[in-house]
Length: 413
Image 1 (cartoon, one colour):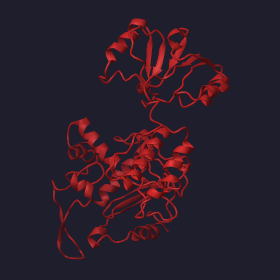
Image 2 (cartoon, helix red, strand yellow):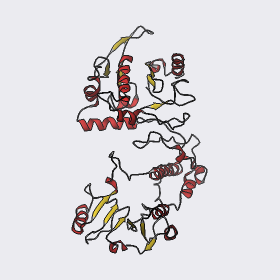
Image 3 (cartoon, rainbow, N blue to C red):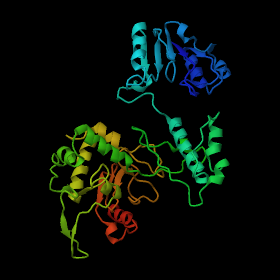
């Protein structure tokens, strides 16, 4: 197979889809690799020469052998001649972008083939080429640069970014241990939330050790809130009705689970001997109308037990509502993770030792959820036991949560 790396013509584009290191691997595996010379590419022509490939003039892909696969990153330069080769790149031609029709006609006229990187997927439907680690790294680092700049220049617009020649110079500029030390806020550094890409249950923290840009993994409701909105859009109904149709009714939980404020439930508080009614206390849920993807649901311990029982059936492939594949994808903890590292599955928290609110006796093969008001469940998949705890610490002024692990430990002993 012959791969032809063309030079990029888009103004300011220095990236490349093929590094010298990757070229070396391809050549070792009997690929023929041709690389066009480029003054703008982040890697020098000499780097590619040393990798063992053939170097040719910029733009010569037009006359490349017909069996060559033309590899690029961004759009081809505007032109009219027919495209006869197989091309791999981000064509930006399927969302009404400017010039999309003319581009596709060029492929049709030349009987060429477009393999658009945005739409190449594996058997599971996941993209094989998407924003990778370094895209996230650069975005997070630039966010810190802007934050640093605003600290000392609150009335000025952040200046134009200029490329960095390597990751070391990038980190040195952004890191508080480098030139940015003078921007450090004495009130504290900004908090950082890491979102795992779909399917990656454990963020690889070994990739965040280059400087002090990333420090810890924090929980965020955002993904669950967005997922709730996606479901409402997909089913053309509100989340409350959808929940009862797809989950509560099939599991016979209609009288055990409810949302506020549509259905107000009153009960007597044994401490105050006064009637209490359900109130949404999660600030985000309250702002979004009382029910959203992460909060707003009220129920009994028995109802949660029945839901967990259905998840347990799914783990054995016996649930009518949840497939075993979905259970593994959303619930199964990564067996290779370190028990001292707090990570999340796509659906739940995991037990982190020491200091987990699950207590000392839940194994690392455990999942759980901690509600804002003091509700929780923990399920040890290895020991096949779960504990459901429904309390309201906010009723007593937001008491510390040390009681949770104490109760769990007493029950698990």
